[in-house]
View 1 (cartoon, rainbow, N blue to C red):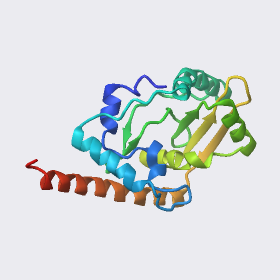
View 2 (view 1 turned 180 degrees about the horizontal axis):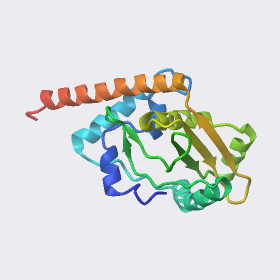
View 3 (view 1 turned 135 degrees about the horizontal axis):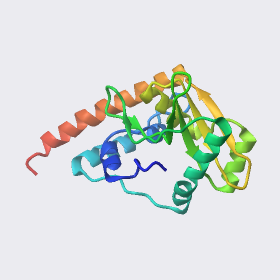
Length: 203
């Protein structure tokens, strides 16, 4: 994982803002509103009200991902002859939202990369499918929306098995759905945060 990520500054940049890794909580991969949208909006409003950073979740799988990500980047750079540029949190030009790419790539108008280092059985599922897993569509397309880049690489890396590397092009229809859902969420977060502050200001 980038040295620019999971720092105190990185967590502060994400505080109270929808992020690409969580766009699936606002919109489905088919462009429909997600049933988890209200719960996610509540979570983000709570972050703004308390000023508390999101919990730094640690698990076996996340720790494994952090450990293997540098190896995955090295493999990608060797296989493609492309350089992966370290990135922190990138804020959308006009909205209070953003993304944290695993890396940026200067290629054909701009690219980026999302790296997953899943458990063996999960990786096999990705290999069998041979395409971008549906659960990451919103994150990948959302990252292209935030950064304005034309395409994105998705890499599922397991050190003991073949790697899955996919180049994903922009899907303007999906991006439009993401933009609408995130814009609506940002507006709701701002207005309801202010409303709560005003209503309960004397408590």
